[in-house]
Image (cartoon, rainbow, N blue to C red; front, side, top):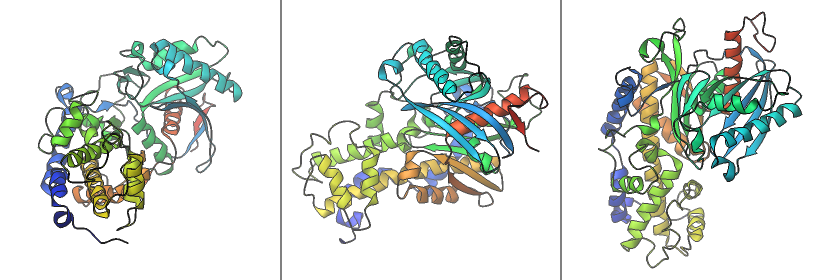
Length: 468
């Protein structure tokens, strides 16, 4: 065990460099309150286009009860892969799931849109034949990780690709229709696509099946987003065709964009601005750039580069590898903070990969302080958003379904997020953040079954029924 370091005393120059990342309670309250204002704006008819939290309608108005039964298909379209699933709900605790993961070749993700969806349709056809359900016309739900403009439950217009996808022919088109058209080429396969939802909504729906008081889905990893249950009376974007007899609607906040209208300028520092200017999307998704894993690693790298160039840390060490943009990955930050207090074994292993060897213990302690500071701000800012939504919903007890590597893998992030959410939420609103064990595809499958029931009378439905 090494000595305990006080950053202000032992490495004051590094402390002062990181000081702009340290937010006080007033900063956090301001962020929480401005987020609430932006959500109100996003839900309004007149303010929606001006809001940096646009609050898209999911068109999902039914939450799972845990009594749903039946067989459904799901398709997850995620940044790194796609997955086709057959999900069977037999009892309240018995969920059978069979799935096939599809690695998406770059030649497909960068192709024309119709080639991408033809590729997916081909694999769906293979999967349902393997499972011997190709003639059953099972309801299918899609969980989609890219931004959509939802016009109905089964109409989602692709706004943009990201994270390696570049099938530009699909942008501006209805994703569901593209897949339906691709499946027409397989006349021996019957699949009934009922709707499309985002990953956060799928995560919420999946947990809600087992924990009925789930009212929020939170994604905090390579991206960040949140969805939550809103009162229909607060949503001005409904048209006459919406079933307004139902009181609730799941809202996809798309809160990654928060700050695009200058709302975060009072806390964004030089490193935030450098990261943004050198990113592929300057000026956009500024909240996400303060909290998500890819950007947290880059912020740490930028801080280290400035300090190394000034001769303050890792003196006379090579900067060749640490100088490469995006080279500091989240797994490195997790490793650095996984060392016990006063121990810096993993921190040195991380630096070895950057060819920064035989580091002084004080430098490694300073490195850990830099990582802790950046990650604490991330947890604080996500806590602002979660508390804002808890205060909006006003439920006495809520479960929050969370997914994403940052919450799942980081050693201290869950504790910090819980702490700052409790600090900023009204104390009368109790909450529990629960890691979603079932994937968003399970939620998409449930949505498909519920929609099937809504479209057909229960007496006609043999594929899906409410066991009540």
